[in-house]
Image (cartoon, rainbow, N blue to C red; front, side, top):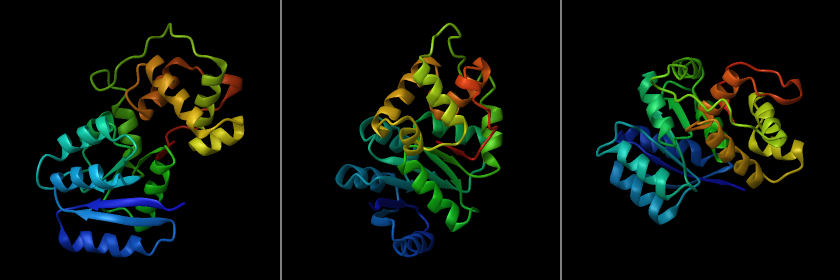
Length: 226
């Protein structure tokens, strides 16, 4: 199945280049393009693409658009495609439900991979920046501490183990012989139990509590967090 994608960027040359480049991908369908925050909201409300790729510097309030889409249109996954490599900015948008943070210096293949990863339910951060984000989120001012007394079920521990091995939701579902929808349900439960606001914080909380089942290995920091 093709992934429907919309691009929003206020640089008309870059916007046309993105549309032209990714229209040639067999697994993607470019369904819309826009130049500002109003366009982003309108595209999601009317078309509901699988993935919305937008720049934070677009005209209008990009952050407000992200928050509204994250609150009301959860079927659309958001990737921020930006020149802004500020770690705190990345954490801020991740906390508002953004699934991907890709720098514009990245390759075309990396953005393509990000689109596929977030569509499959994962979180993607540009290589190099991911490590900085993970380290910064250990700061108590940026990341809430999870309730250490919270008990995790054996299934939840299994999900965590596969998550930290870099498995996608689909791979976890196949390994455990459950549906992708069920994996997403457990991920939501884990975020609630671990006091995490997103999947990145689930990883950090799990590392602090050392709650890995069956000797699950800690794979370290990865730029793909599924």
